[in-house]
Length: 387
Image (cartoon, rainbow, N blue to C red):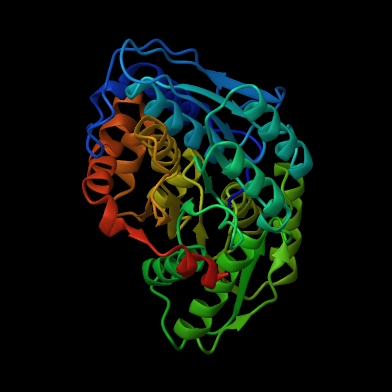
């Protein structure tokens, strides 16, 4: 899970336009029981001032499908992208989708919202079960009440609860980000100095695993460097910047800084510029400042998850299962990631600049995943073992 306080306006606008007007072009691979039909959508992406958001679609054919999606918290750009993908699937296959989330990180409220959605008629639900340890009973209840039509995303579900998980390998996220940054920054095994690693939410189990991957890879690739204990970089942007500025000030010999959360990217860039630092930066967000930083060399590399594909896949699985009268396929489905360096930053800038760019970027990714869904589905126990 990556946390951020507010979306980048240009990218959010592109996401909004994608889910409203350009989804029909996505390839309709996979289940033949689902049909792509014209639909009207009312879209409200997550906003910090609202406790729930919703999007409705209608379909002239097929069994009516009423779904719910529970996000972690409103106002996060990765959640907005997840929601846009979910709304794309609902629109494409003629389902009704209601999306809700607490206004702050509040699992108790999220659990209550899921219960309410099911009681109001949702026959399938996708849940960001963060932290998974608090969702055990709620996931079991949701699965029972929806006749197995429950999937999780963001956090691996506890064993014995839900059987389908859509999300990336959290350990690999850290490993790939660290390796890509070290390579792009041309740091070798003889590199000395301090390495700073952040965790903006120490209570998050996915983040803890990602940070573990970061630390492991730095030790392997930079054995002579000093890896400082991961510090709490804080969730809100202002507190995050302050935390990074203090951390960088305390480590003047830093050669590498790795952020595990979305907001870390902007803060690292600004703190580096303020301090006149020379260290390499590895980020997880692709907002305009980070993309600009990659282009001008301030940031060495960034790794972003395909949140749009994650939301799309979770909802499409549920639509298929409700219409087919069978539970979603058991297992672990990884939506994918994209690593960004100077070599491909222009492509990502073009993607985020418009709805057409974003739709075009994700169309082949979704088509490939759904054309090989069975091979792409791994054992859920493998995902649970990583944590």
